[in-house]
Amino acid sequence: MRKRTKLFLTLAIGLQLYYTPLIIAEQVAGIGSDEIGQDQTALVLDSLHTQEPPGIPAKVDTMVATYYSRFFHGNKTASGERFDRMDMTCAHKTLPFNTLLKVTNPKNNKSVIVRVNDRGPFKKGRQLDLSYAAAKEIEMIKAGVMKLQVEILPEDSLNTKLTEENSEAVE
Image 1: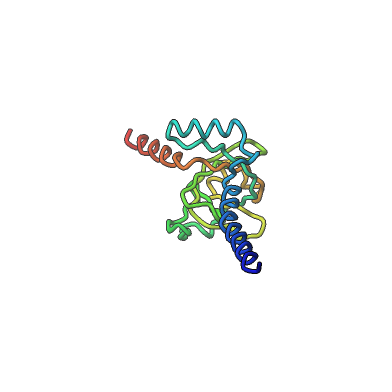
Image 2: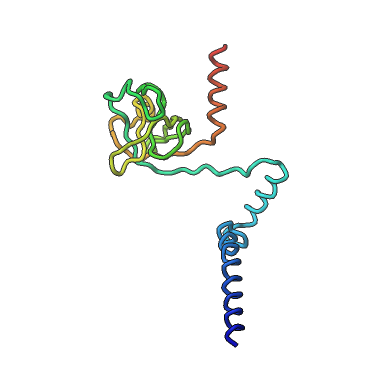
C-alpha cells in the first residue's frame, strides 16, 4: 500500500508542476479574461487580416514640469548631444531618447511638440524638464513649475516630422 501511495503522490505532484506554468501563462496572456471586450477582439482580428498592429490610443498624462536654467546651455545631454535652450527638447527619467511628446498647458491650451534627449529632472515630484524655448512657447516661464498634459506621440511621427523638415529645407 505504501508503494501505491508514494506513486500516486508523485504522479499528483508531477501533474501539478506540469500544469501550473500553463495556467499562469494563460492568466498572464489574458486568455478567457473578461477584460477583453468585443471591440478589442474585433480590432485584433482586423489587424491580423491587414498585417498591421492595432492602433494604440494616445494616452494623455499629467506631469509636473519645469524648464532648464541657462546654466545647462551648451552642456552635453545624456543622449550625447549638446543642449540648446532654443531647441524643442526635454528631459524625462525613463522615456527612450527621441520620443516625441505633445506638451499642453491646460491653463491656455497652448501646446508644443518636444523630443526627449536628456535624463531628469532629479528634483523630487517633477517628471519633465523642458527647454527654455518650449516653456516660452506654452507660456509657463512665469510659473516656473506647473502641471502639464503630456501625450506620447507614435514612433513613426518622428520620421514624418523629419521628412517634413527635410522637404521644407529643399524648397
